[in-house]
Length: 280
Ligand code: NAP
Image 1 (cartoon, rainbow, N blue to C red):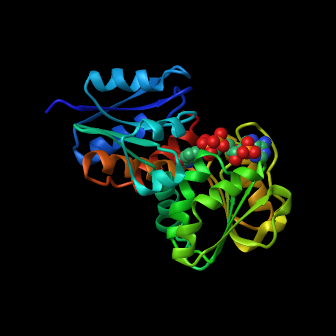
Image 2: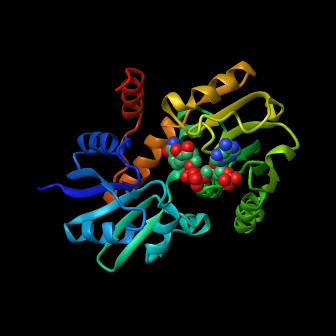
């Protein structure tokens, strides 16, 4: 059977590890998938997707800076993508484009299944209110923590995110609050850095006082850019984890949306970590 085409679309996109991950998933599942990269001009997401679809493309992952725009191009959105207002997964169906957001499922799977952290009943600090934070807030709430505080440099964005998720939080019995970075009250068993602060080489955007005893500190970043955050976490006694597992798990969820099969992730994550550690 000739392979069916998928791709990651972004700007830039050259750095993406998604083709490597999906090639491994295709090998492991035997699914006929060919996965590439699409560099879209900043004003050309729609045209790039149309051209890819006309050439037989079956679906895409969407990365920076297009996740919000992609949600507007989908004709049918999952509930979590609608709440997030952002998509990282598009599937081209005969009658339109289905949009979903698997970032949060990936984060929760990495925390619970891979790291063995139970989210039910704990206090979570989510730092950031951009596309990544928007994508993970719903699945974090669904995991049933006691409290989630969303803190962001631009506090209005944190408030908007809390507002859009307040009904879900109420339904799940979770206390959901917003704060500016310098107004965080309390200590948290899980601190998730969903800001781009590591990318910019900036400092850690919160003080160590937010870490509860035996806390887990998670940076969505991975590779060398995550080193500063991980070092900070360890030096304050927290268990540190980078976002590589989230990357692999969100990709597995996308693969499942396209192919109906969830690929195994453990060996893929271990191999990818070795590859990165070898500097390749
Ligand atoms: P985004 O939409 O551009 O949002 C950026 C966020 O970072 C905003 O909350 C912004 O605050 C904050 N920020 C930027 N620089 C900061 C600084 N110096 N100090 C404090 N806050 C700062 O980006 P995104 O899509 O949410 O991505 C965020 C990070 O998550 C990126 O590093 C991305 O690579 C990573 N990510 C990883 C995965 C994975 O699978 N591992 C998946 C998705 C994203 P303001 O609102 O105040 O500007």
